[in-house]
Image (tube, rainbow, N blue to C red; front, side):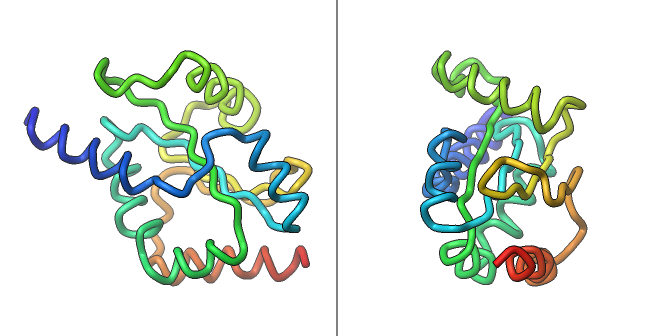
Length: 146
């Protein structure tokens, strides 16, 4: 079990490369590039649906291709294992984001927001959609906000 958790944690952390960790930076980029922000709350070392969402949707080629051109991606991670703990500053930023966008503490929880930080759509839990279906939903919202 320990090996399995370590491998999943390593996979999840490495796979989230390219996602912003600072929401303020993401907002600036979104304003400059006229893009929406996809904010994902995850528990990278304990939340199986979070790991599944990342692996099956966020790592899919259809999502990556769409997101690279149309979205600013932000990950607010809440790992539980001591060895995976984030810097105190990052923990504080993630907690502030959770207070504003995920006060119920749902995992995974994915929120699409505009460049002002206004919520457009939220998905609680694993969305039970294929990567293509999820990406299609995102495309609808992105197209409506152009």
